[in-house]
Amino acid sequence: MEQPEEEFNARMIEALQTAEVMSIFFVRVGRSLIIDLRSDDATGPAAMLDDIVSTPEARLHSFRRLRPGLPLPDRLTLAPWTNAVRDFTRHGLLDALLERCRSEGGESLYAEAAKAFRQLEILEQRYLRDLVRGVGMTTIWQRSDP
Image (cartoon, rainbow, N blue to C red; front, side, top):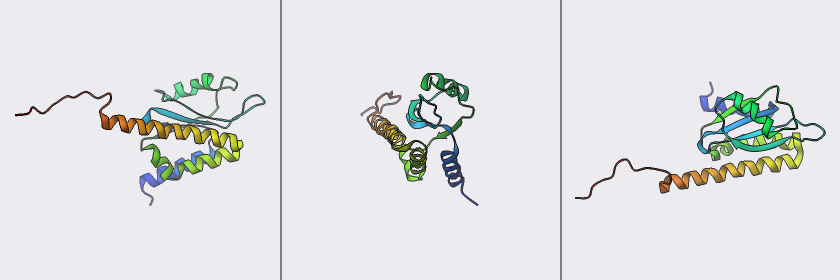
């Protein structure tokens, strides 16, 4: 029997290989990577970053802003990623995502998705650096020197 993490990763790869519209929300950095493979004569497939939204309905309605040339998607696959951004790569998920982008949208969609993912990596590095430096943190207890 597969371990829960292995099962989750296998399901993620399956979703990456089959979903037409997918929003992967990277909890640690507060951003969603959205892959929309729909297109029409004026609008091609897209890979983009957006803020995490509070509900699935909010994500669905965000497509009015993100993809105004297309109707709202009929189906939307939502997937949380609570691990580090770099773990997405380590588990083979980025390769599956980029391969799908290349097969569905060619080199331009592949490059767009790779660039968006690189932005997630940069956001995570900034988050970790700020965490170490205490940026945005408040001291709740301080040792008093004798």
